[in-house]
Length: 448
Image 1 (cartoon, one colour):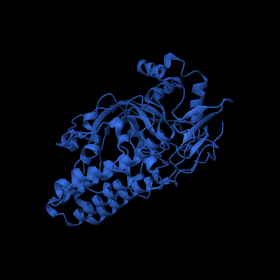
Image 2: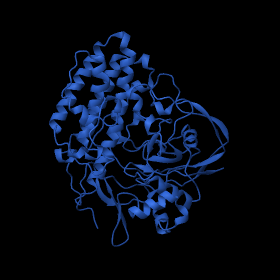
Image 3: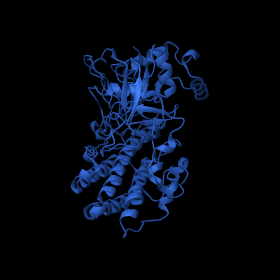
Image 4: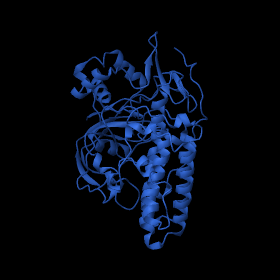
């Protein structure tokens, strides 16, 4: 096996520095100039991600949980049209009323939705028409920001800022959904440059201890940006624990495979074992083994050998749990993770680094955990549930997070496809236990 089949079909993806500075401000402190600057940057970043893709590339949908690039571009535009222009601009008229059905994701409060598993069948409007849709809505939003009455400014700024953070989430999904779609092509198409191999070995794994405490967890509700599921800030009793100085590497996971990790029923949750038997999973997503026993993996830069020094990605919660059992540890709770993140260092890569693939965590270990932000999302042992006192906002926007608080697990930290300014210590991502197409990895914890 070799990577000669990797074909460049697009220019390398690029993402400017769209980190919304308005996230760091209380909503009443956001100026029109700042919001305009952030709006232009985020919207332009999405278009740069799609710029090198053909119409065929943009309409791939490889599974029900992934969406075509074109749909992401249209949906994020529909969000601004529906939640900003319609309620705040009396002169606005919809571009096409039928698109509200095509590009609504799950907001039942504003209408029905086209079936999610069939989004790849939406050949019309085509990519050019979606591009025009984005341009018209962009111009209208920018004019609205410039002339909105002061009495409605705080309300408008808050919903635009939500829309920007929502679009950054879809920028990450563009990368992960496209990778999943491209992975089925035996030509191993490339969207970025081939990620270079690690120049240094991964840092030694050490354990960093934290004393028992009553910790304050969650975001501070002070007007700076956070999603509603990060609130309210509350106290949790946390026993003494230790957390790994870095996430698990590909080489460490290969050792798990070679030791029969996928065959040892004692390591697995019952649901995880059933999932593995049903799917035939025996390695992380995008990995394949050559006739000589060597492991290869598909990256957004094409096919290349698995680099044992790199951080592991594309494993399910079930695999993360089994590996932790095998390694003599466990997954951290999200409260433990958040405590450790307060002193984290050595972060990245992020989307702006244009690698779109996890990197090795190298260097000499310190007394603080490394690479807790960026690189890979880290599975926690915490189920996705509301914090004590959580209340979803009223109206359709209240459907953003709250209604998904069942049967999913929390991940923390962001990934190599997350915009740098989008992530923070309190950010709660969530996916179902079998999900693997995100850049999801493992950081171990254990009792002190």
